[in-house]
Length: 141
Image (tube, rainbow, N blue to C red; front, top):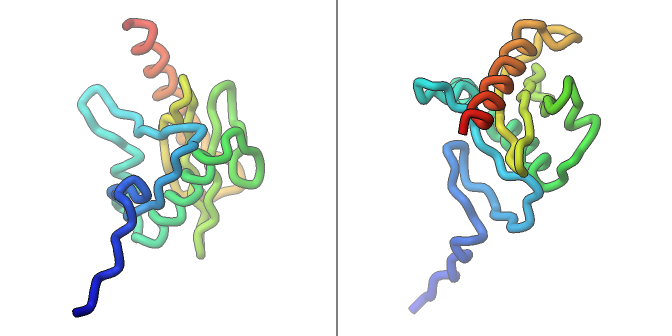
């Protein structure tokens, strides 16, 4: 009779919409997606439109931020007060995920494929507007 290898303990892995990740217990940041008043999660929706390999690469960089926060270049760049970008080099293009940090949680505000040297003003405005709405919602509580 052949015995199966023991499965890894469940706390070592975590299933996500984007694959199974090894569980790290000493994360410096947790992550959540920005949610609109209508319940949409724009960054999650954007990620689901990308090919699996690109989703995985972006997820790995976000995980690096969670483990090593605070980080700087080349992975993270500060854009504005309480606003940073995760910089992800994909095989044939560049992705950015803009986020803010509040109370130990990185809130993913906006994601896009970068097509120029400079962060496009509309993408930066989207992230700033969403961050402002988060601040307003927190102060209303």
